[in-house]
Length: 408
Image 1 (cartoon, helix red, strand yellow):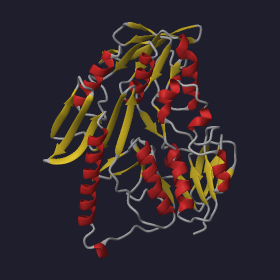
Image 2 (tube, rainbow, N blue to C red):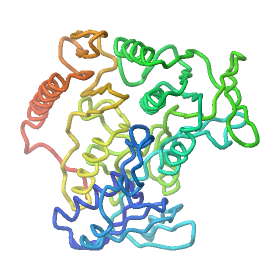
Image 3 (spheres, one colour):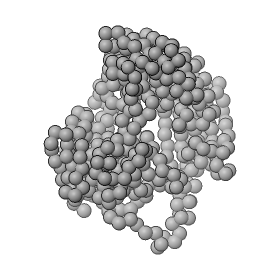
């Protein structure tokens, strides 16, 4: 199949789609369009060690520049696509350029959820989802004494750990009653609260931001909804992400608040268009009756491989065990499977040793694990979850002759 394929979004998922297409023998034209001026780069380090390193931005590149030329991938940077004409099979950019496609992949990711309070746009309010924010953080951090982190999720706690290790006074402001509420169970929430407090981080729960105080256009503090004022020269915001669905909605594709709707083959409501990565919402690999949008490198990579197969006429469902990780200073959290909504859990290890495993069960069946600094536990559980998932998939596929593939 030598069709022209256009990939909108120069992201981890976008690059993986292009790479997989070439690996699978696609000889046609591949054009990848990104709104940032950079070549595709790793985002996870932006809230971790990159903040205090001297590494150049180029060190985050997923591939060297020569890779795109050698693999005949046309990489267009600094162009924002704002319209898809599905009738003509053409996409259009803000600058007026048009690109025809025969098959289209949307890997447009998600945007950070932003504060909407007075002072939200002053210098020093950072989201750490792009290189620009991380570089500004590296510039401001050495002179800062106080840092306020808004949001007790992965990005917020990773950045808090970096700042505390750098000797800064750090306060985390979390609107709910516990940390990591959307991603881990209560036991692991308590562990991370204890671990970060030991490292000097302070916490304010069940309150929010009312205003960013400023002094001559830069951050001077954070006023909370309870009326208190926290001193700060840097405010790091990690309050979630919003999937970029505007382009898909404009094109008439199925969307929801959770993302661009796809099936287990990464196909959208238009059979010529796939979507993958942080923007896509589809059946959970371990619970197909449940729609989910997964924000992780693993999901971006694996779903992109499925999307590439679909673009080439294949029908390979996304069927892997989801996994995640978070490096918070010297604490490494690894998660596999589904760890929310379990009806039973078991804990091994201890808070004091900072080596902990929480295994989650539903109806007596292992559904997921959360492991801190216990990689062997994590790998064993992930392997067991994978074997169980494969067994269920084989059972569902009996008899194979009755399975009907979607139209291409």
